[in-house]
Image (cartoon, rainbow, N blue to C red):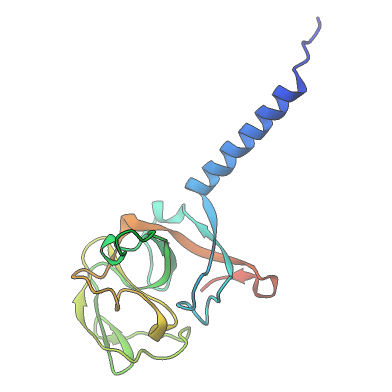
Length: 182
């Protein structure tokens, strides 16, 4: 019994093809790397931080208040001809919640939100809003320098659940700031 030897070029191409397919599958369905392009999440995330965004948990559970998410912004806030880049913000309001920002405090269902992670209190006001089903109200941790739900000049300044790409879970760069996100 002799075993036929496969051409090493064919074997190499098969290995490369399988590797590419696996990498694309993981990126599409499991996790992907993202970088931070702005100061909207400062001090939690800094410009050029690199993160792992996992995409599995929201298939089994709903997003929670405080989660840092990557999502596609509402198309109404993207100028015509401009590329629609993903945003990263923190979930502040859940479906059915009421949200209001007054006197430097974010109120969720009438209670002040404990926000030890923000750069400084908001200097703006947000009228009382009720979040629709399967939608989320998001704010950047740098409350006064973030283009987020409070700043979107649209009638429904919310992120629909089906526009959430995933949850930011780990910062892997720079190495001096390596670790989980809260």
